[in-house]
Length: 184
Image 1 (cartoon, rainbow, N blue to C red):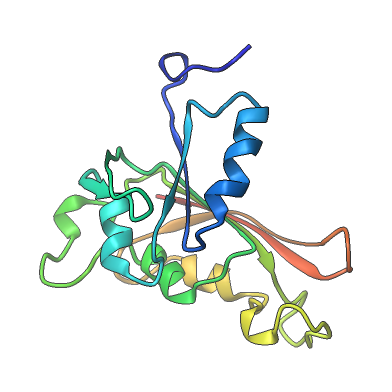
Image 2 (image 1 turned 180 degrees about the horizontal axis):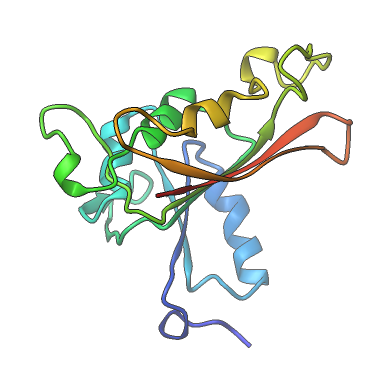
């Protein structure tokens, strides 16, 4: 049976800054019969104002189709083997109350309960070397990088770390972090 939007109150949006991503994802979603609750958007993830527009309840213009999409509140952000430290810092420092958003500086609002999940290459310990050609060491997380970034802040914006584990990928033995944090 196909899962229809009116049966499922959530909608899943794949966001990437590579033009070919939608072409690869859409057949996967169709084969799993979830294509009516999923969409993909081309978005420059280095432009935080565009990310903010996409992640909030404002009207978002999809750069690939130039069509307007009405977005609802973000409940979960999930990144697989994608590292953008500027974007991660922006998400980690997001305000949990719309009242805490400074209109003079780019600031992201994510409601309490928002989930941030990530699977990415990571050094297995704080002092470990990265002994692989791919990815480059500059694109590998330090062991405590995410827990430090999403740890409780003195400014009152807090995340609860639900999972912070290291595992190995199935093809080359490289270490990956499995990280999940929830906005509290």
